[in-house]
Amino acid sequence: MRHGTQQPRRTVHNVMFTSSRKNPMRVFGRFVVLVSCGGLLLLSGMPLGVAAAKSGADHLRRFFSEVNSYSAQFDQVVLDEALNLIQESTGTLYIERPNRFRWDYDAPLKQQIVSDGKKIWVYDMDLKQVTVRALTGGLGDTPAVLLAGRGRLDDSFSVKAMGAQGNLEWAQLAPKRKDGGFEDIRVGFERGKLKVLEMVDGFGQTTRVTLKGMRENAKIDAARFTFTPPPGTDVVGE
Image (cartoon, rainbow, N blue to C red):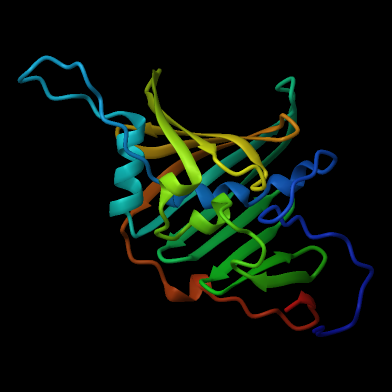
């Protein structure tokens, strides 16, 4: 399906589905899927009468079970295996369970990734090109499926608390399947609020996303989760 005048096509950086060592921009959007994940790891060995401090895994479980909508601004960096900076980007995200989300990348390239719960649109504003496909098409148990859903976290990930580092409590998610594009996922919480996401892919590249201005369970306009291609946009896919 195509609308408008056909233009020379450049691959839209749709990292929901693929990974590329040569193209760091492909990491855009993939971390989106993590914010719906949750895990539970109980602390033991605490003296009787002393309340156990909440671990990163506890905060992850709370986020997964109690947060139905979420929005934040983000700063994202991509690092190579030697932790050298490859790419920086900024933007705003919106999530509403189940399965609806929007990622607006402001810089360096303007891009939108939108899901209405059934389909995903990846829109390159500079190219005036959008790629559309089914939300679950070929994704299996990757983090993308868990992004804004209510799936069984422990079926897809091994979850453990990593303890505190500075102001953050960390949890680690190790994918049980190796076809999701990530080898290791770490989630950091500041005072119980989701603050940092780190993902390591099969090439050793790390995507780190730092969140700010976070809002939990605030009403989000339903129009955020719909997408209509602007006139003249080249539409590729379903």
